[in-house]
Image (cartoon, rainbow, N blue to C red; front, side, top):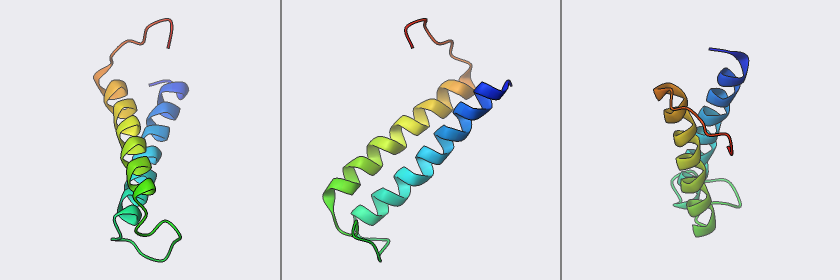
Amino acid sequence: MNAAARGRLLVGVLMCVVGAVWFFQGIGVLRGSFMTGQGFWTVIGVILFVVGLRMIVRRRSGTPRSESE
């Protein structure tokens, strides 16, 4: 695995972690932030988590990227 691939994998993992935190803050499970109980952060958290998961899955499955990506 080259450095760029490791970087993409790391970014994907970090996006999943941050997305999960924002999701749980948005639904009110994690308290202590201005994001607590705000539906906006729930949606953003889900989107960030899905994008991060896609990066991880594409990296681990070895799916080739097209020239346009």
